[in-house]
Length: 504
Image 1 (tube, rainbow, N blue to C red):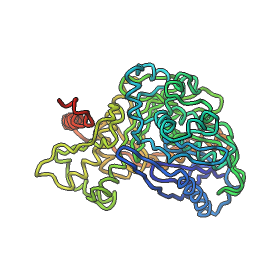
Image 2: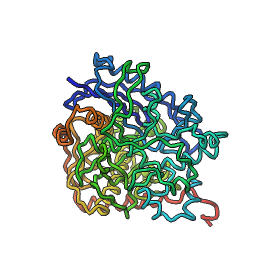
Image 3: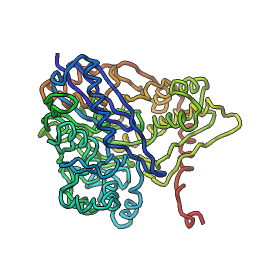
Image 4: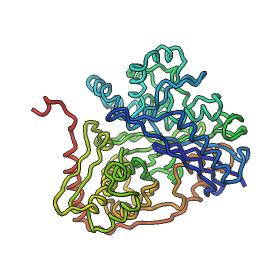
């Protein structure tokens, strides 16, 4: 029996999962890490805490499976995207906490660039839009605000890497300094056609090329082997990398044009495979690389990103304290037939796709004396479904593809009321696979393909199995009415963070 390991480093936790050659889960270990909020709109992680947790997860998962590192044929990495770390790859000196994808400190620079750079130029070059969500403005902020960092970066003594780069560098004892093409496509610095760092974009953000990792395929090559002094205690090929949402698309076997998935995690992310062709969005969606296998041309995807999904459930638990756990929230939501007229728009860090409004802030709309804790619980879950609906409809318009089903994964798919409501809103079946750890599975697939555990994509597709299906039951007129009120609630969030002059 052959085994493949997947290191799944997410926004709130890290997991290492061992899969067998049938794509079945053998063992898993998970640890949460601290969320650091220096001021409103800023989010950071401790890079060394993430690496320490990764090492422990690897050791514990191997022990649980009664395996040694040498039993693993290859390691795949999947990671929270856009989160940036600056470090010296020779000494290991970390210059600053990781700046997380949700962080808004790049907003000022983005607004300045908007004034003299056409958004269509950026979209054609990178497939992306002006937003502090992407890595470029975070790197620029570090270069401008951390004393001595720019001088060292210009000398080639610093690398600005996403989490995949950091983990690969640590796992291999410094032998590999790479990022895969899916992560690179989220920097706002990569040319979406050539899949190389773009000189004009680097100049726009004033970032030295020598401070960036090499761009490599998602699968089809060994980047380096793990160091024997690391958690695997042996030399194991590190041979697959995919950003978390692309990894979920890969793990859901969405290998052909028109297949799509939605991951319900901390955020919510919808991707649809558009094949070899670049589709430029007119609906506020992103053009991104879906994956690249070896020397083959990349496959592309359209993506819509929602900043707050599962984190809204955490907020209800930890900040509002209206429930003790997600199961209680589900039970409350299921105890009422509808939201009681309440709509929650969780624009905690602005609105992502399709609105891209960093000055929006969250609202609870439609409150009356009739509303109970149960109605709030239902509105919390429904908020994610409404946001996903907005993106889904934009994807259909952009791609010209009418999607007849939606594959789903992620922790929130355990919420029956959410999945039922999602099917109702979209008016199509929502399908959950047998193996729900699709993000880690996608990374494992990418690694296994590189070392011959699996032959090709057709073999991987044969392992995908349906576990649960939700069919739509809502009447069209009710659906339309709910969407109308949702859009009214979204309008209430806009331009909240404005100047006094704006309000006069």
